[in-house]
Image (cartoon, rainbow, N blue to C red):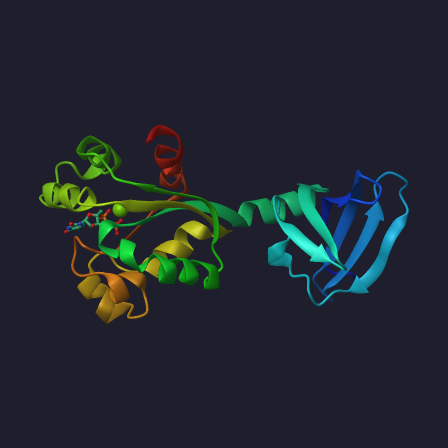
Length: 224
Ligand code: UDP
Ligand code: MG
């Protein structure tokens, strides 16, 4: 039984020859082995070998992996199995560090990295009143709306587009319950438990669905 095989088109810039070489990169999770086939001449470039340094979660489109001193860029999935299996799992979400935790930025970025989130984009903005109202429009009738808007506009915020497997639910789990006091009792390791104050000043935002994660556009395209 062979087990699963994932296939990618990878590129390597051969600086000596001054050309980009393309390979079919095959990864076998069963024994963590890699095989590479030269796309142009269809010859085996690397015969199937166990590669301890390669992990499946490093293999996604846009990723770059170093193998035996060659920087391989993952440009496409090479078969339907790989495409369906992997492109489904990777997700982007919108995260916001709210004004109350901007001073903790170095620690927050370190946490993102250790938790396996890749930062695709990041932007510091001072929200205008109308931008904050627009972002939180579904809460406009709630009693806490004015408090929320004045908090979100009191200083700069950091908006981040994060990429990870199941990023939406994983980021929500990492930030914890809305109210920081609940977070401290229910999820003491969460970011809101550690860095938040109360139900308004709760350190972070996280999209609650893939659809609302698309609001990432709001920060990276619409807001200046
Ligand atoms: N909020 C508040 N009072 C409340 C509930 C929420 O000030 O009673 C604020 C809080 O900053 C929260 C934001 O409004 O993060 C959006 O509320 P939501 O219920 O969508 O919580 P979230 O999705 O952020 O956990
Ligand atoms: Mg919400």
